[in-house]
Length: 363
Image (cartoon, rainbow, N blue to C red):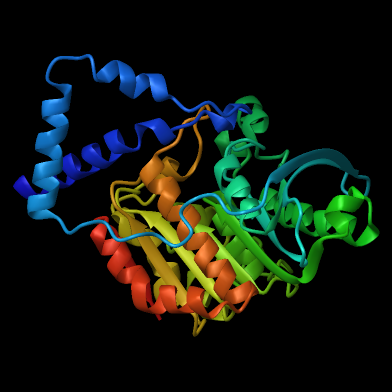
């Protein structure tokens, strides 16, 4: 009990220290809340509480080690929105693109699949961070399971195997539009589709796992053709092993060995959403069973399922920092073959995670 209290105190102290970095970027604006901490300074006892928290952290916890490329990268970020319509499927596919300006070399591509009830703003923090470090992020909105669809049809009728297939169709359609050259020239002229990763959160993580190789079968036991070999690496945030979501989608959780390309799994220490008694460990199964020789898992202290998304524009800065940093390190290592990034993942990530009360596993 004492240990849990100290861990919460540690997070409180770090959160207070980062208050000025919080943003409402998910609402389409960026406004540091400097006034928030300025106002707190006038509250009697606030500074004393902060000093006590800092002293407790220093006494019982190691000093935080620096994250890999935690700060914004060197490139200004452009954001482009474009609406598409897939006539073959009679489905709208709105697309948001985050891309770097003033690059001297081609930009690797990251396609991002949002979670159930997500939208073009829910993961804005990650798209902007990756673009600032030289990546072009293609983030389609899955109109059959976005915010509007869930509000209209409820999760029961939007989290389905049919929608999983449509999501994979969205990803393929977006890449087809890139190949067809229908995006603005300043995007197309600076991307490298020979170096691509697929990432996603929650339903997007399940989508990522299916594309990466996890077998999905329909009601008649027939395997669905969801794998796409164009991707070189994968990031699954809040993935699922054997649990209700994989049962609903018809995913064979014994087939995680078919994920053979580099993969990063990230999940929250307190994420027990839809695991029904299995708790957060249900999110560790994909890492344990994945067949890749280059696989990583990060379990973020204090994070739950929703911590990785921006809810009404706000986010948990601790979770965001770990997600941004580890994602860039993984992509630098496996899309750019950057040796310092590889060294960070294999030699430093575990120590950095522990210094922040999180955990990291490398295989």
